[in-house]
Amino acid sequence: MDVIIVGGGIGGLTLALLLHKADIPCRVYEAVPEIKPVGVGINVLPHAARVLTELGLEPALAAAGITTSEACFFNRFGQLIYREPLGRHAGFDWPQFSIHRGDLHAALLSAFVERAGSDRFRAGWRCVGAEQDGDMVTVHFRDGTDAALPPQRGRAAIACDGINSVLRKQFYPEEGDPIYSGVNMWRGTTRWRPFLSGASMVRAGWLATGKMVIYPIRRDIDPMGNQLVNWVAEIETPDYQRRDWNRAGRLEDFIGPFENWHFDWLDVPGLIRSADAILEFPMVDQDPLPRWSFGRITLLGDAAHPMYPRGSNGAGQAILDARALADCLAQQQATEAALAAYQARRLEPTSQVVRANRSTPPDAIIREVYRRTGDRPFSKIEDVISHEELVALSDGYKRVTGSDKAALQLRPIS
Picture (cartoon, rainbow, N blue to C red):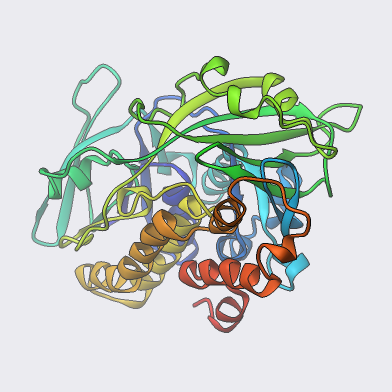
C-alpha cells in the first residue's frame, strides 16, 4: 500500500522524505535514466527552508549554496532603488538559500536514498498513465526504449512530473500548451568575484528594455575566492520555443540590451560573456485548475500549478504542497479524503501565486520606477517613489505567497 510518487524532482523528493518521516511507505519513479544536474540557480525562501530544515537538510544546503542576506533592486543605469534583508537577516527563524538546482536536488536525493533505501527510488521509469480500481491505483510506465515496464500498484499516485505532466493531461486532455508570457529568458552561471555583500540577490532593469536577476549560488569555488554566480536575462520577445531545461541559448540573441550595463558594483556584459554555458527557455505558466485530486490520484508542484519563475516561488510552492499533502495523509485514514483535504488547503493559495506572478510580483518595484521615471536616471529615489510604497509592494507579494514573517512565525508545522 505504498504511495507512488511520479517524478523525482524537488517536489517529489521532498514529499518522499516527509512521507518517510511520517512512516508512510512510498516509492519514487523518475523518467530520466540517469540523474544529472539540471537547470541553474534557485532560491529557497524561508517558508520552504522551514520544511527542509525540519527534514534536517539545513547544514547540507548551507554548505552547498549561499545563505542569502539581502535583496537589491536597481534600474538599468545601476542606481539603487530599494534594499531589504532576507531570511535570518530579516528576523526569520529560517534562512533563505541561493543554490544550484542540481545541488538542492542532490541533497534531497541523497537524504531519501540514505533514509529509505536505494530500492525506493527508480530511475528510467516514464509514466504513461494511471487507473483506479477499488482501494488501489495502478500506474503504467515505459523505459527509455519505450518498452513497457511492470505496472505499479499502490494506495495513491502523486503526479510530481512537472509542467508537461502525463497525469495532468489524463484529467485535462483538452488543455492547451503552456501559456507564453511574452518574455523570453536566457540563463547562465559564471565564475566571478563576489559583488555587493557577496550574498546579495539583485533584480535590475525592466522587461521592455532588458531585465536581469543575478545572485551567487556557490562560494569559494577556486583559490581566488570566486563564486559561481547565477544570472537570468529577461526580455519581452514575441517569438519563443517550447521550454526545455537543457536547450542552449545564443549570446547574440540577447546581449544587446545589456552591453552598456557597466556598474561600479558589477560589469554585467562581462559576467554574461564569461558564462560557462547559456540556456534559453520561455517564461510560461498555465491557468489555475479547478481541481487537482481525482480519487486516489492528485497533482503537486508544476504538475498542479505551473507559474512564472518570479519571486522564487516555483520550487518553494512545490515544497509547501509536499508539506500539506504529507500532513493530510498522516492525519486522514481514508486516502481519498486525504487527497481532497490537501487540494482544499493548497489549490486556492497557489492559484493566487500564479495570478500574482502575472500581475504584481516582486519585480513590480522596478516596473513602477521604470514607469514613473520614463526609463531615465533619477537624482534621488525619494523623488520618484516613497520608501513606504516600496515596502508595501514587497510586503504585499510576501503575503500572497505565504512568505511574510508574521504569517510564517504564527503558522505551526504539524
